[in-house]
Image (tube, rainbow, N blue to C red; front, side, top):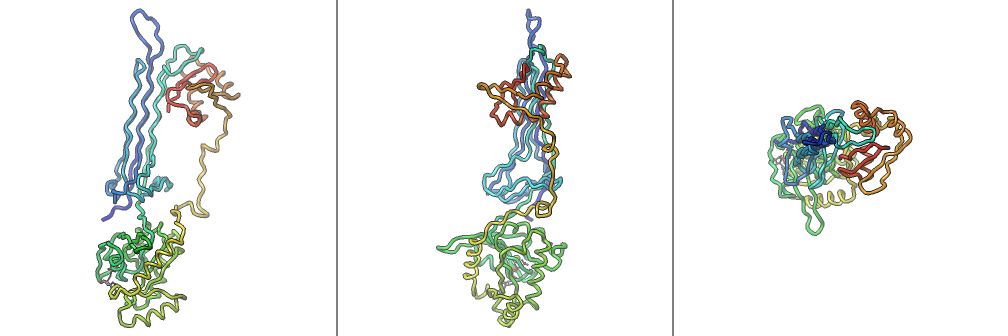
Length: 425
Ligand SMILES: Nc1nc2c(ncn2[C@@H]2O[C@H](COP(=O)(O)OP(=O)(O)OP(=O)(O)O)[C@@H](O)[C@H]2O)c(=O)[nH]1
Ligand SMILES: [Mg+2]
């Protein structure tokens, strides 16, 4: 079976702790601080690859975990960074955070890379801090924790058009005729269990990708038959080819029933441009049935037969033209539709403390701002707790992000009044 949905566990690496250490040598009674920084934790990335076809590798709640950064050491030795993890997924994989079903990424092109979880930053060792008020810093930072959460991977096929309809209307048979697909066909319902894809080539016109979907029945949206979960594959299709069989007792009832199920699915699939097709036009009484059907439908459908190949090329040309004239559909994201729930970011709404970052010379950045410098002046830097308090305060202001925006690089000097520390990415 095609595994097209997987819930995975994601862990990026923790940053390594910074070291507290002092230079020691014979005849040098009081050496300076020489504790190195901790290494960065590894990040977890997803990479879309066209040669990967399923999410099989991610079943059973697979864990994607990147390494922790190593701790810093004496003699200014920096901890090694944790290795990143690159996990390959099929093109067409959509990623959500399980908690709250938050949409994260849509990897729709070969080579697309998405950082799913960022590794924690390493802590600064005590050698990274200098201040005239702080001669001997006995303080180091702990590494920042990595991220831990569960993510949902969903594969949504990238087809331009999809064949939908009741079981046994001839969807797979049609796909096989118009493409090189070899979808299983049979005269029993639910022959097709997973969607099949085929490329339709119209000489000197163009190509498109056609998907053959498993049959739908009344109550599919409530899980009857094969259910409708596989409809997620056609959320990106521009055109639906809706097939009704002329063997059916009541083709119009079949048609309306599928429309209802599409509506129930909830991604506005029922509003998608649709070509209505009457299949099996070779069976007895098909012409009359089609006439009655078209009347109820309110416009003329296309009658085809896989046996005689009647109208199959005109149908494909029509589908091609409709695809060309239809804008791509943005992915439907649950909770973000009109009237959906807006999620507020608590951090963003916090009161902002004004500060500015100056960049007076290469590799040197200076934090300025009345409130920041006043607060700095009030902190007692002669105690370790004081230094820790200062670091927490700076981090809560978002100084790290601001420095990064200004172009700070690893090891650059950051100054606040007479306090200096190294920038660590
Ligand atoms: N007479 C006639 N029979 C057809 C035609 N097209 C398909 N069939 C037959 O109808 C049966 C069902 O065809 P499939 O292509 O498997 O139907 P499907 O819509 O894919 O069915 P599910 O996969 O179960 O949803 C097969 O026995 C086909 O040979 C047609 O144009 N005329
Ligand atoms: Mg089929």
